[in-house]
Structures are given as C-alpha cells and as structure tokens.
Image (cartoon, rainbow, N blue to C red):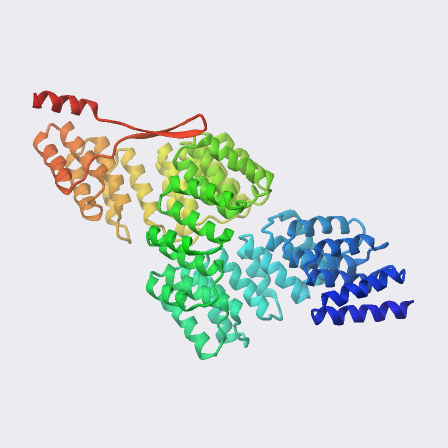
Length: 609
C-alpha cells in the first residue's frame, strides 16, 4: 500500500510539473477508485496539482478529506492560498492549525507572506510569529528572515526591517529586494537608492529585475531622473532583459519626472501592454495637470482593470476635480469593479472637499464591511474626513479602533485635534506616540506646531521647534517656520517674527510672508504689512487674498487712496475676489450655493440710473 502511494505521489508530481492537468485528474480518479485515502505526501501533491491548475475548490476538498492532517498538509494549503492571493483564508487556516499542531519554518514563512501580501497589519500575530521564530531557532532560516523583513517593510516599520536585515549573516537577492522594496514603499527613497548602490558595490550579488523595478519606482517618486537613468544604463550594460514589469517601471520613471514625450515613446513601442502600463502614463499625465490627455488614453483601453480606474480617480482628486472623482467611482462600480483601499483613500478627500458627510459615512461603512478600515491609508482618510466635517469624536473613534498605529495614523489624529483647535489633545497624543516608540517626521511636527498656533503657547512651540533638529535630526521645513511666525504674530511679537524670518537658513515662501501679513493686519501695522505684501506680490501675484488683506489694512488706517490703488491693481491683473460658496446635502444630493454681491449690484444700478 505504501509503495502504491509513493508511486502515485511521484506520478502526480511529474504530471503537475509538465502541466498535464487532465492526466493528473485522471490519476486522482484512479486513486479514489483504488480506495486509497490521500494523506501526507500524496495529499500534498494533490493539493499542489489543483493549485497549479487554478482549481482551489478541489484543493480544499482534498484537504478536507485528509483524516489526520499533519503540518505538510496545512503548509500545502497555506501555499495554495498565498499563491492565489486568498490571504484572509490563509490567516484563518493558520488560526485553525495552531490549535492542533506546532508550525514549522515553512508555516511561518507562508503566514508572513499572507500578512504582507494582503496588507493585513496584525501586529499581535506578527509579533507572535517573530517570537515563535526566535524560540524555535528559525531566526537563522533565510526564508523566515526574508519574510519578516518584507512584512515589517510593508507595514511601515522599516527600523525593525533594517535591524533584522543588518543582523542576517547570509543574505540572498530576496533579502536585499525585501529591504529595498520596504524603503521604496514606505517613502524612504534616499535610503532605497543608497542600499541599491551598496548591493551593486559590496554584496557580490547582482540586482535582478525585481530590485531594479523597486529602485526605478523610488527614482520616479523622488523625481530623481539622473539616478534613474544610471539604473537604466546598468540594465543595458548588463544585458538584463526588459520584461513588461521593468518596462512599466521605466515608463513610470519618465512620466513622473516630467519626461512625458519619452514615456509616451516607450508606451507606443510596447506591443504588449497591461493595466500597469496604462496606469503609469496616466499617472504621469495627471501629475502634470494633463487631465484631458489622461482621460483620452483611459478611454482608448479595451478593458479597464481596477488599478487603471484607481489611477484615473486618484489623478482627478489630485487635480481638484472632486465632482468628477465621485462620478468616476460610480462608473467604475457600474463597470463591475468593487472599490478597494486605493479607491477609498482617493474618494474620501473629495467627499470632504464637497462636505458630503453622508457619503463619507457610507464609504466608512463599506470599508468596515469589507475589512478595509484597518488599512492605514483608508483609516487616515476617514479620520481626516470626520475632522474636516466637524466630528472630532468620530475621528478619535476610528483611531481607537485601528489595530496597527503607524506614524501616518498617529500624525492624522494629531492633525485632526490641531484643526479643531484642541492643542492639549494634540500634544497629549504626541506624548503618547513618543511613549509608544514611534518617532515623528516632518509632517508630524507641522501638525504639532499647527496645534500650538491655536493655543498661542509660544514657549511650548519654541521647545518643539528646536527639538526638531536637536533631538530628532530633522531639518525644519518652511512650514515649520511659517507656524512659528504665525505664533509670534498672534502674540503681537511682530519684531520677533521679522527677526526670526531674517535668520531662516532657507528662502521664505508665501506661507511665511502670508503669516506675517496676517499678523500685521491683526496689529494694524501698515508698514510691516506692506513689507510682507510686496514679497507676496512677487511670489504669488494671482492670490486675491493678499490684495484684499492689504486693501483692508490701508482702509482701517484711513489711507483710502492706497486701498483703492491695491484694489485697482487686482482688477487690472484680471483677478476678482472668489465668491463664497457652500455645499448642502438635500434628498441624497449635494447642492452648491454661490454668494452674490447684491449690495454692489444695487449701488451700480442706482449710479446708472
């Protein structure tokens, strides 16, 4: 009997490797007729067969028929689920398995792949697997280590990923790719490029297509065309075949760096295009405001997949085409596509812009129903949406429900409290974040200093500002300086604000001068206001707000001629004050109301008469 099972096992493996599913299924029928109970090796081979032929229901049926399931059977089914991206099912199966059996290194590797692939940020399970690996000595297993590095990289914990990577005694190409990919996906583009250079110069290993695609992605996102061209030269000099994934990465590099003509040439030369090809160039068009060209290319597609729809929706949102975003999502659903986390994180800001609270709640409910609410980008978008609609308690509730609290989600809830003027709440959350071992970034400090502008706490703001570089090694950005100027101005310390600006190591932008102009307007300091206004006129001559503030400042000082001169200058340039507008939800629709200057019309009518 054992001999028969071994023979059947070898035959199944042979037929599977040679892609002969019909003959393999016939062999399975013979096994059933022979009344052999598939177990151990034979069951694993059958599961592998049905996995290779995309027949998951048969694979699960074979698995369910095993009388006494061992680790090999569970691993075979875990591999099958991961291969076909049924990551949630893989996690459920592992939960069942660990109640009965002790996992081995292959189990840990596949469960980590499921967590990474499905973007399931289950910190407790990841820590459990990591700890289990240490206890069982799997921390020396290169496959387990690679899976851990990949997982931590994908869930924004690049510090832990790098720590594991540096401790690895032996690294293969997958090890380097996991860390390089983690840096690229988390936005650490300089670190990504540096590690790639180290791999080329010191590792003794040759980057493969996966490595190169990740680095090209980092170059595109950081708009580093020079480094990207060096990578392309490396590809050509080493005669690395450009498969579709690599060619898509090259198109994306050119598109994101503004070389749209080169991107289009590569695009037109490709005979085989997939949704990533179209998404890459559509994204490039959207980045540079060529919305019509992007939509035209999208309409040329015979069949649009979800990723391409998302590229269009995201691009429309970036170009402030908020009503078009909602309309495009409706068309996408009508075409038979279900919104995924990328779709949701793109549509929610548009719903915030048009003050559609009901729509935001519907998206939130959909995300919970489909288990997307734990995705960090969806969660941060929902937190931001509720905060902008005036429902801070809902934002806090979403934050409290989040399983994995990365820097992004901490920053979003801090910013939510700051927007509502809740400086104490924002600062308390900041302290909680630090106590959890999460290090702030530049965006976090902008949110904290913004909270200080509401409270007017100058001493605290100074302490935080100087800690940005002294304690965290981050160069203060122009946004940080603008916040400080706002705080000085609000407290009536205009001379200190001017002195602070004069000592800036970077060029002040419109935000800095705008903060000073607002401060001068609050204090009625016409000359200082004129000083800031003159600089703003050079930087952003089309901003009507600056003209209006300056004209009002002159008017308050009784300098009517100069006030009229500013208004005339605005009129001559062709600018007019943007009318006030509001959105109101009625009967399931959003109505837009535009304010009319009725008084002016009456005055003009009387003058004409």
